[in-house]
Image 1: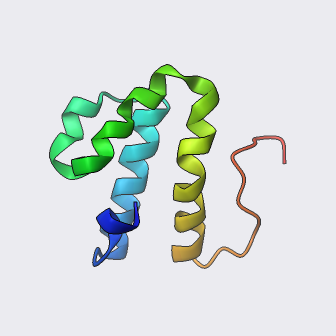
Image 2 (image 1 turned 180 degrees about the horizontal axis):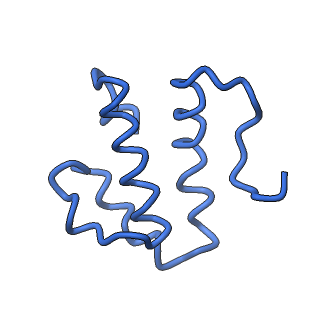
Amino acid sequence: MTDVLKGKKLKDADELFEIFHKILTGQTAPTKYLDKLGKLAAFAGVAEFPVRVKCATLAWHTMHNCLHNRPDMVTTEEDI
């Protein structure tokens, strides 16, 4: 993730976050974004294992909160 995001503008990092999250949660097909994902496309298979989606997206949620100066605790749990 850090290699892909290094040097990107905030809007580009946000776009990658949205694309990555949508692919891993099964909301969109990875083939539509292969050019933008690069090496991250390897994570597309995680969508087939719902219990692993939280693990694969936690760092992305943390990055997103940091870039938007949100000091609240990062979680992938909906009830917290």
